[in-house]
Image (tube, rainbow, N blue to C red; front, side, top):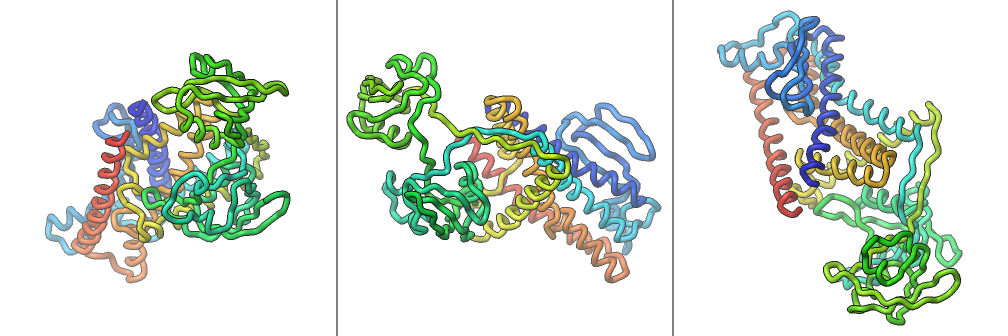
Amino acid sequence: MMILNILIGLFGLGAVIFVHELGHLVAAKLVGIDVEAFSLGWGRKLVGFTRGGTEYRISVFPIGGFCKMKGERSYATALENDEDSIPQEPGSYFAAAPWKRIVALLAGPFANILFAIAVVSIVWGIGFQFETFPNRIILASDYLELQEPTPADIAGLKTGDVITSLGGEAVTSYADVQQMIAQNALEPLRAEITRDGQRLSLTVTPALTKETGAGYLGVYSWVEPTIESVLPDSPAEAAGFQSGDRIVSVNGVPVQHTLDFGVELDKSGSPAAVQVSRSGSLLGLQVSPNQEDQTIGVAFRTTTVRTPRLGLLGAIAKGTTETVKTLAISVRSLRLLFQGVELTSAVAGPVRISYYIGDVATSGFAIGFGEGLRSLSNFLALLSTVLFFMNLLPIPVLDGGQIILALLEWIRRRPPRPRSIYRYQLVGSVVIVALLFFALFGDILFLAGR
């Protein structure tokens, strides 16, 4: 399954990279920079044709692609020939005015952001539904022996609270809680809650999970212990559990929610005496949990969230706002790298990114075609937004670094020397190689732990 996930993910990652390179191609041609080759994929050419001075090809590894502009490495040739200036061959990259180069460079990242907006807009235009749990919470500290209080404890949250708003945004499910908390590490959030019928307002500040960079609150969802389905050939089926049964107690200990049930089941040994409510009557059952994981093979009732189909303008507006939110999160995440986040865990390489894409896709499609398509589309949109942001960072070699170089030339009104560009690119290469080292090392640790 891991290999399948990685293969599926590689094609998803490749699609996002291809969109990026396509942006460079279109813009370069519009501003008069010749493109020597544009490839779908990498490696040896399989098939291709030439049109308008550009060779369009499909390469042996159909993942991502590249856009080779004419003379984009002519500074290296000039350096090899001991020349003090870069050759200004007509139609070449360095012969173009700085503003034209900036347009060609910006087009790649902006193709990614437009792709993200388009994908998210389509998802919201079609409408979707997903399964989640209630926004009523349980404090982790009520069930775990912790050395220090959790952010939920510090904020004054209590088991049984219903979170209705976080950071000014409405919360209707536990998925909303998870998303807001994960995306706002170390950011104070105003939380509106309902407790015993009263509305209260608190401030919660999610802690930083150094392994991932995500926020952490220290709560679980309060899931009612009502059985949705019973797995075939499971201990629960053998014991006589049925869909619709509500678990009342385990070995005489009352059960309020599924966490209670799991905890008491772990304590019970085998067999466990479970009392259920069925059609208004109480019924006692004896069940022996699986020895490996202490489960009995039941799924509990979830909450179905359905979003309405939006019109064209509404979908585009939603796609734009959601993409802007993702971009803001990317900017904040960069800051977290300097606040103790473990680089090998937080900076994912191509293997982990591909695995996550594939895992999201296969998990979603296991639920249904619509859920799989929604999950995959949202992840690709997220990845495309991150690629937009990362490529505009002022690091030599990346688009952002090249834009700075063109801006300096524009301001100074004279091109840099080949040796200066070479040194500039060398610095960027060292930074990228260092980040790639951390990412690949993290990928190896990730694979070793699977």
